[in-house]
Image 1 (cartoon, rainbow, N blue to C red):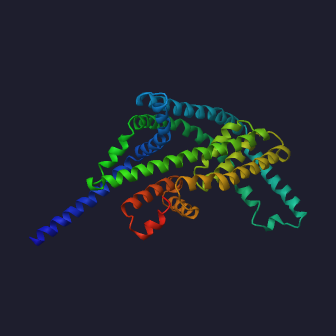
Image 2 (tube, rainbow, N blue to C red; image 1 turned 90 degrees about the vertical axis):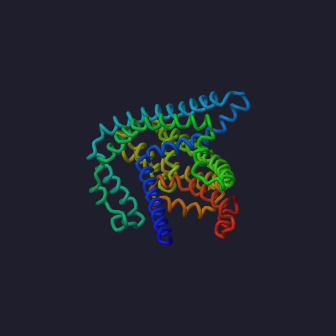
Image 3 (spheres, one colour; image 1 turned 120 degrees about the vertical axis):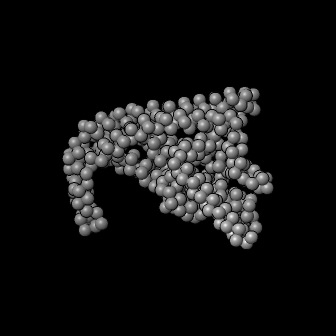
Length: 362
C-alpha cells in the first residue's frame, strides 16, 4: 500500500513537471502570438477609457464604441507609418549618394581639428582615452545597412499590427474575455482574491501606460521644437522616433540620441562638415540633453510615483534585472510585470514581512 502511494506520487510529480515543461515549450513556440496578445492587452487598457466615455456620454453600444476606438488607434498608426516613409526614402537617397571614404576622411579631419583646438588648453587628445585609430578602423558602411534594415522591418510589422488590432478589438468589445480566461487557471477558492488583484492591476497599469503616453508626448514636443529651430528636415518624424525609443529604460535614450545625431548629419550630406554639419549636430545634442533632463527630473518621477508607486531605486534594480534576463524587451516589461507581481503578492501573502514593506504604498 505504502509503495503504491509512493509510486502514484512519483508518477503525479513526473506528469506535473512534464506538463509544465510542455506548457513552457508551447509558449516558447507561440511567443510571437503571446507578444501580440500582451500588446493588444496594453492597447485595450489604454483604449478602455475612450470606450467608457463613448458608452456613457454618447450612449453608444459597446461594439460601436470599440470600432470607433480601434479606428482612432489605426488612424494614428497609419499616420505614423506614413510619416516614416518619406524619412526612410530621403535618408536612403542621401546614404546611397554618400561617399563612405570621404565621410571617414571628414571624421579624421574633425578629430585633428578638435585635437589642435584642445592643445591650446594643454590637453593632449592623443594621450587621452580617445584615439584616432578607432576612426580609421571603423567601417562606416554599417550606416546605410541600418536604415535599409529599418525599412524592411516596417514592412514586416504590417501583419503584426493588423493581428494586434484584431485582438485588441475583441478585448475592448468584451473586457471580460481576458479576465475569464485567466480565471480558468485560478483555483475557485482564490477567485475572490484574484478578482481584487486583477482590478488593482488594471487600475495601476492603466495609469502607468497613460503616463508613458504623456512622457512620449512631452519629449516629442521638446525634440520637435528643437529640430525645427535648428532647421532639420523631417523634424516631426525624427522627434517621434527618438521619443518612442525612450520607452526602453536607460539604453533607449542613448540609442535615440545617437540616431538623432546621425539623421541630422545625414540630412546635411554635401554641406561643409566643420561649419554646418558639426554645429547642427552639437545644437541637436544640447537640445536632446535638455529633453532628457526634463524627462528625468520631471516626467519620470511624476509618472512612477503616481502610477506604480515604487521607489526610484526599486525601479532601477527591477529594470536592470529585467534587462539582464530578457534584454531590451525585459527592460520595457520590467515595471508593469513587477507591479502586477506586487499587487498579487499583497493580496495572497499580505502577512509576509517583506511583502508588507514592498507593498505598503499600494
